[in-house]
Length: 201
Ligand code: HEM
Image 1 (cartoon, rainbow, N blue to C red):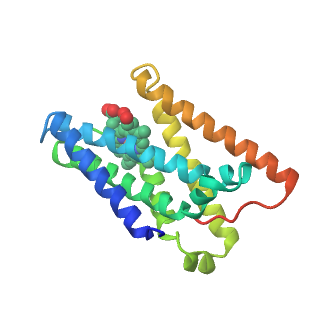
Image 2: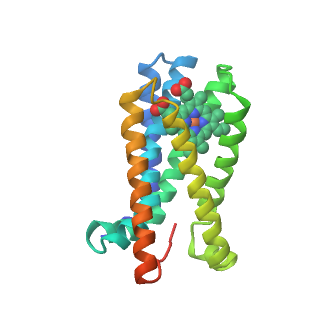
């Protein structure tokens, strides 16, 4: 039986909230340090969801069938789950900054804010009706640009932590490099053998 999209999205977001609350409790409770732990764990939880959604069509093109094709069929649910998870990250940021006066750099507010606007736009247009309303070409541009922006912010965040948190940043940067490699290989295969798999996020 195919799980409805909303159950996947809701379960992922509830898991993000629970993880955030547990890490907040362990990391200092109702304090700025606690809230920061919530910020960190929710970004870590959202990251693999994004990588899966971003790599789904490349994986299915390189190795059609099996779990790769199943992943591609559920890409919309996985992408929406990433968006829901990442809005929980935003919730903890608002808590840390709004309630506990955690200072935020203008660069992260502007860069992160624009990226959040793109994530919201992608989530709001993750439906067949939106594809028809926008036209496939414009829809694809929005989702391609948004995907690259999110990848860039994750890359920047994890590359920036290579020195400070290598145990976290090395696997994360490795996963990003792997996702890029898979994307390049799938693009090359597509150029040689025909049109891309249909996009559904
Ligand atoms: C207004 C927007 C945003 C603000 C203000 C913000 C703020 C923060 C803060 C304060 C942290 C904790 C830093 C620390 O460890 O001390 C953090 C961590 C992080 N954020 Fe965000 N963020 C924003 C948007 C984003 C976006 C759009 C992404 C990804 C697409 C992202 C990915 C991450 C990652 C990967 C971490 C590292 C988590 C870890 O240490 O494991 N953030 N963010």
